[in-house]
Length: 178
Figure 1: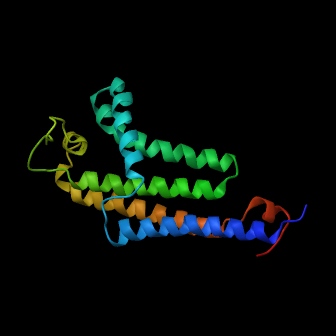
Figure 2: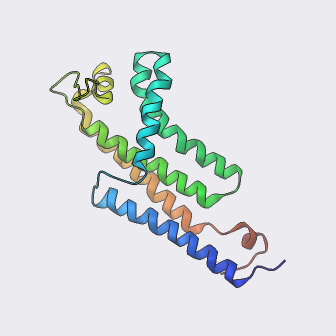
C-alpha cells in the first residue's frame, strides 16, 4: 500500500498551514504583545467554569480554579493526542497550553497592588489581586507576570519547533523521505 504523492502534498499543506497559524499568533502575542488570540474565547469559558468547579474546595482554590482549569484542558489534550499518536494535534495543544500562560500573564500584570482587593464593575474581586495578596507577593505582580509570559513563550517556541519535525505516521512507517 504505497503512499501517493498527492497524500504527501496534502499532508504538507495541512501541516504547514497549522504551523503558519501558530507562528502568526506567536508573532502577534509575543513579538507585538497583542492581548488577543482566537483561543481566548475558549480560555475564558474554561476559566470561568474552573471558578465554579473549584469553588467547592475553598476560597483560595475557587480563585485559583479559573487558571487551573484553563491550563488543565489543553494539558489533558496534549496527552490525549499523544496516546492517539496525533502528534501535530498534540503540538497544537501544547501551543494552546503555552498561549494560556501569555493570557494569564496579562491577567496577573493587571493586578493592582494599590487597591486591595480590586473589584471590577460587576462587583467581582480580581483573581490575582486576591491570590497575590494572600500570598504576600502583590508588589511583585509585574515580575511574576513577566516570568509567566516567559514560560509561555518557551512553550510556544517548543510547540512550533516540534510541529516542524513531525512526519505523518503512514510515511514514517514506510520509511519514505520527502
